[in-house]
Image 1 (spheres, helix red, strand yellow):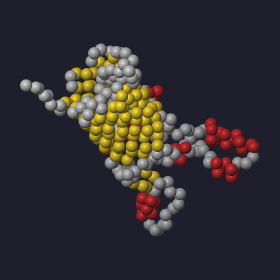
Image 2: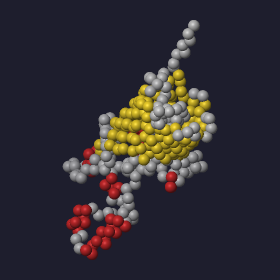
Image 3: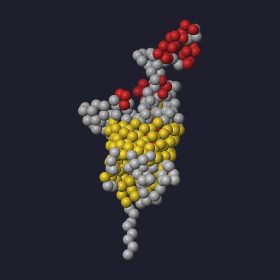
Length: 327
């Protein structure tokens, strides 16, 4: 079965389509800023962009290896895809395996949340500097390395509709507090063929838990409406022991509690257009993330708040296969 999808990628994740032996896929991906302001920031085009340049080369009909550089966190990725099965009359699915190693190179500093005061020098400015440095940790290159593996399952149901399901696993060497190093998720994508050269595509990425917005979970968890702060279990046990205190504790920790904000579920939809050796993909999305080792962290914008952004991918395919003509 040919053309389960129009190109070797959908919107964020790769498709089961292969680059092809001795073929090169040069890709330019772009995500603009928040388009909520529309005319004020020209649909997000004035708000800066996250961009990626990538190359994927097909060593065989089934195996391709690629390299990508993304501006967000100055991320470099090495990736590979291997086609295991192709859909035909005997086998109902196309199956590929995909793996990525990502390396973020931008400087990243996190708070260590120290609970002790460093010894004083009796010089306020110096004490403040020592405290700020003691409370910071600069991530190493190993800390900023991530790995992603995915199995791609696609099926072309008819000439109009195709669907792909891709279970994903990501390991990050360093994560913020209250987050796990390992995370699983699933990419769900599909296409509806409109004409010979135009497809409608959609994609969403589902995961049980995304990253929270902020640096320190404990500080975020104590946020509340107004000036009221949540009571810790230690504060409750030490100060509130009578049954009449229960109502007060309930209001402090439940009624006035403000939940920790998390990133949103990514969802994208748009149009693919094929013109010879090019595939143009234009779409609406709520996620500015392009690096695939970062996809399970969640989306930036909330559709319910009318936050969204414009994105596009441009594929240019080159063939290096030699034409052999027998005399």
